[in-house]
Image (cartoon, rainbow, N blue to C red; front, side, top):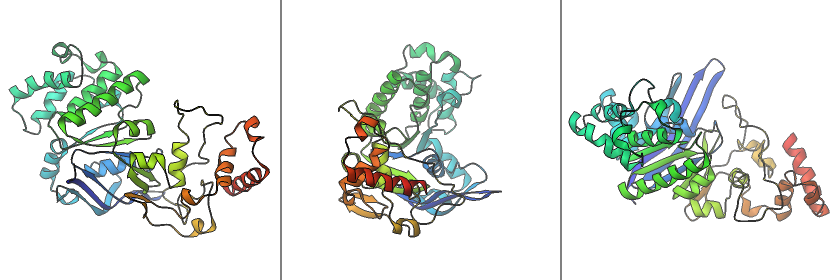
Length: 363
């Protein structure tokens, strides 16, 4: 690690619709080093998947990359010719799409689909590709790989289909693997197996990964750094341990405290984030999170903060950093998620603060 593999600079991807321009990715800048696993987290609709599709220039109509640069080993992906981008996809960067149930062709054998991914890019001869299919399925822990290559997708379980998609992604030995919600629709035990598999592949092959997810536990298990997105923008970025230990943006703080933990006894309910993400055709003025933020101040409503350094290797986009929030305000923000019995134990000043926060959030 250390050498930058992918560099995204001030990326803007927009959708031109009858309702207006949807600013799906609004000035995103990030990087991924060789061999690194980067987590990109946030709610649905925050721009995670569109950022990944922009890297591969697969943004669906009526979407378009309007400005910014996507540098892969120094080459600007946005300026590649059609033939170059076809070689780039699958060979240099591969993507595991969100739903393994629908990503495979139901009328074609799994082995042939993986084989076709190799021969299409001319990385391997037809005979070598045929022998590599079994090796790839064994590598992703598909049992009886020699016979399963002849099976159709409907004969695979959800977990096996996801393993087949990972094998297809690794078929051409890409330098970067983009995984979009790789554990969606899988049960908990299979999720754990997929996590362990991806961790092992990253360690053995040195493949860099961009993990798109809303599962914070998955980020903690796999990633070295994490990018938190909201309303098409990055609101916080830093090393995983640092972000988990000391989140500075209220959105990151809320996401982490909405996740159940088994390593501590909780006496209060999980914190919920009120409201919905903004309409990206008409986003609110100021900070895009301010209508839902329990720590909002007047400045948040009129002036948008820039992404600034808040600690070593950690940046956040916020006027009210969590380290500056008073304890009673934090208690007030949690109050709406507490049980009645626990809420009665709060002091009078915390209850007053809770009422003030509730009135602001409802306005």
